[in-house]
Structures are given as C-alpha cells and as structure tokens.
Image (cartoon, rainbow, N blue to C red):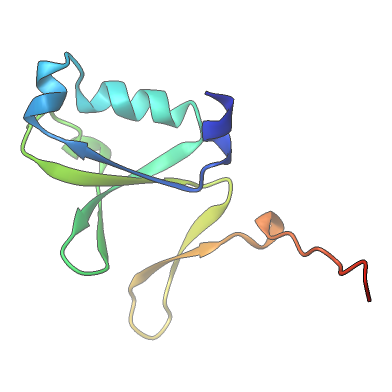
Length: 102
C-alpha cells in the first residue's frame, strides 16, 4: 500500500467487470487520490490522453482504459507552439546521483 505512493503513473481497465466486483469509478478514483494520483485520463488511440473532468465521473461502465498521474512527480504543461498538454517530470522530483568512482 505504501509502495503505491512511489508510483508515477498507473493504468487500469474500467468497465463491466468493475461493476461485477461492486466498485465504481469514484471508488477507484478516491482510493488512488489518497495515494497522490490526482488527474485521471482516458487512454485514447495513439499517444493521446484525454482528461476526465469531475463532471465526467458518472458511472458509465463502458470498457475503457484509464491512466492516473501522481502529480508529486509529474506536471502537466502546455506546449507553447502547439497548445498541446504535455506531461513531464517535476524538476524537484529528479534525483541526480554523483558517480562516486570519478
């Protein structure tokens, strides 16, 4: 459970099996949110992540893949040329180890 706090990105499938297990999207979102995962996205064809807005948290049980980011380590920025949202590591989360053999 504590190791989950060190994960940067998590992906899960959501759909009818989720309903059959007795869970809804908000159950999963709320659990992952307590571990630092803040922004959910639908995983679309290609390298596209489509943000899931809070108004879209309704239970649809249509099969989809969802990605959530741990914003402790990652940040969402807008590309100044294309206007596209980009995900990159936060600078303070980067650790550079010095080579002790040098």
